[in-house]
Every structure is written in C-alpha cells, then in structure tokens.
Image 1 (tube, rainbow, N blue to C red):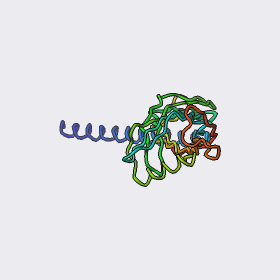
Image 2: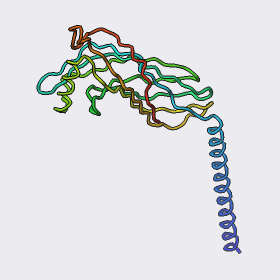
Image 3: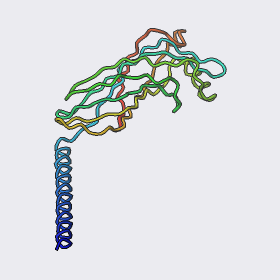
Image 4: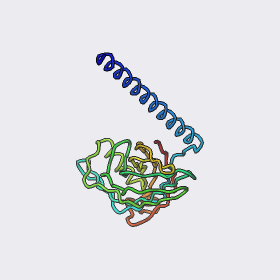
Length: 209
C-alpha cells in the first residue's frame, strides 16, 4: 500500500513540475511577444552624429615615419526617438588616415540621452610619435605641404536603449565621420599647419548599431 502511494506522489509531483514549466514558457513567450510588438510600434532609430568642427594644435610628420598630432573636435549626437532614451557606454574617439589609426583613444564619459535630446562633446584627439606605414607617411607629408588633409574621425562604443523602465542589452556603436581639414593656404604662401584655428566642418557621420 505504501509503495503504491509513493508512486502516486511521484507522478503528481512530475505533473506539477511539468505544468509550472509550461506556464513559465507561455509567460516568457508572452513577455517577448509584447516587447517585440512594442518595439515595432516605437520604431527605434539610430542616433545621428555630426562632426561640427576641428581645431588644429599640432601636426608633424618626422623620420622615421612618426606622426605627432593634437587637435580638438566637436561632435554632436542627437536622439531622434520620441519615446526611447539612449545610454552611451564607454565611447572611444580616435582618428584614422587611409584606414590606419594615427591617434590614441580618447574616452567620452558614459551618459544618458533623453528623448529628442542632443549631446555635444569636444574631446581632444592626439598622438605622440605614432608609427605610421611608410606609404602613409609620404602621403601625410604631401597632404601637409598641399595645405589640407582627409582624416576620418571614428567613435566606437556601446549603447543601450531605454523604453519606460525597460533597458535593453548593450549594442555595439560605430560612428564614422569624414573630415577634410585645411591646414593653410599654399597659394598665399602660408602652407603647413596653422595652429589654434577652428575649421567649421558640419559633416554628417555614418552610424551603425
């Protein structure tokens, strides 16, 4: 009699566990469905970045193909969403030339951006005796003597989306801003770097998340 009761209790426990698991599965599926529907209705948009200006404080190519540079850039980021906030986590700013990194990473402090808000950052981007590829060294020297250079300002980091009290997982953020920076006017005899001059760029950046 006791053996039969024990078996009955085991079967009952298995049924309860099975029902609980099924219930949890249904609940999880409903929560996920509600989130997806909400996400589709809100239609989240990527932040919009603009490279506003650049101020040159130093730019020098020396042997054996070493680059020392120091400039300040102004970047604006706008959240185009009316119901979604954005957390910017650990943003790194740096410059590249012909796909080669030529400055160190400059960190922008983490921040939260509300609905339709705009943030403006003005980080210094610099590098001291940074080795560059020989062919890039020649091109840099030529561009410097010509009075202008084409750089790319990049921002890499992570973002999180905030909808109500819900905060998403982290997503990788990649921002690419072309920057054509004039150094001087070779036609007037002023070639090379003119320091302390702010060049207005107003260049839209490409953003991928």
